[in-house]
Image 1 (cartoon, rainbow, N blue to C red):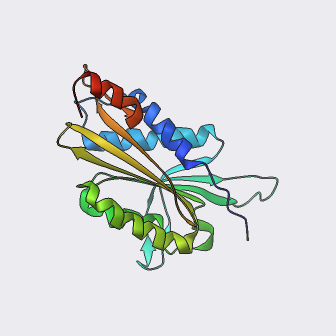
Image 2: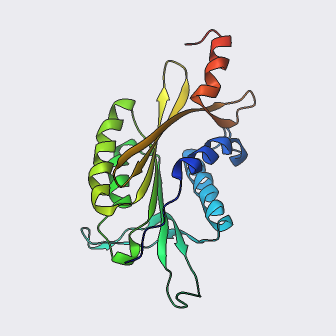
Image 3: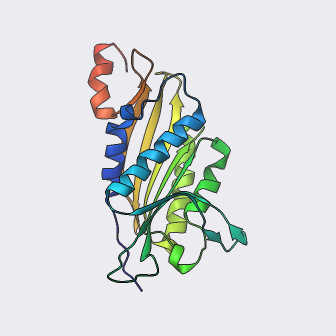
Length: 212
């Protein structure tokens, strides 16, 4: 059995935060456009890293008895080793706007599937209703990943009513459990374009404005 090839997914999150402004998303765009641009961002990243990339790629779910498309997949191809088949599924990514699909998103990332479709790395980007939901979802990730043994990055986004901005919380899991946590904010600049920065970068700016 092939040894899994793990990425430093927290480095991927750092790139996602620092490049968010480049997605050119403004107050004029709807949620579907946010989903498209973010998936495109990770599709381009995969191609630049040399993977074969597919959007809405098929993946058989044994419990459901049918194929459930992956929002994004990266596949490793190397003709020196196998000139007919991909070597492995390097990454499965899901991006979801709807709060009540949070468990479904995790079930898709950690589904019981054919051996060749078990991803070495997974990324879930999920809007949630409130931060109180995070512990429940992370427990579910740990439970399912104890079987799948992937590297996993779960990014939860929710609206902070006090500061009027989005909180972006990233949890990085290895097969043995939670490894690292980073937090960022997502808000609009003076022209209405969305950007992200890490909490530690935003805190001094908040203090200057008399924020908390």
